[in-house]
View 1 (tube, helix red, strand yellow):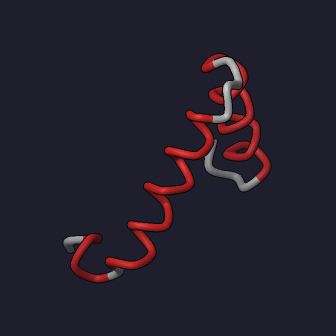
View 2: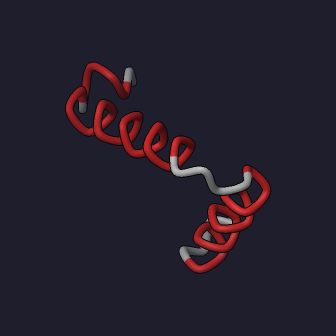
Length: 45
């Protein structure tokens, strides 16, 4: 399944969110720690 074709607007929003997070000035290591913890909380670990 092509995610971009199935949910184009959702993918665009996720890409925009990621761009904003990167532009926030937070350290990359902190961003990765937050993503890892969110995955653990959501049982995606």
